[in-house]
Image (cartoon, rainbow, N blue to C red; front, top):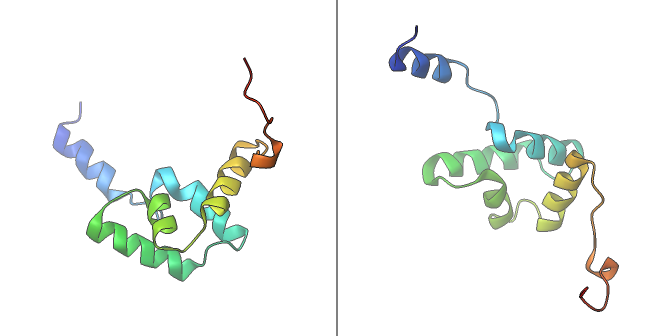
Length: 93
């Protein structure tokens, strides 16, 4: 059985190139030319220094638009992206 220290060492030894929760969104944005590698590196550096959610930081820093993030998430989930124009005039009862 592994101790807590051994588990922590294993977790820290295999560092991914991108943070796990955001990596799919970032990869999608890069593949679809909505985010540049250098901009991602800048955001990762900022995140290391200040913390915060990476995708939120990308938007706040002006590196991607909210629309780009919505399209990436919809694409990854294979769901249609609904626009405001697609919504009904009246809310359902």
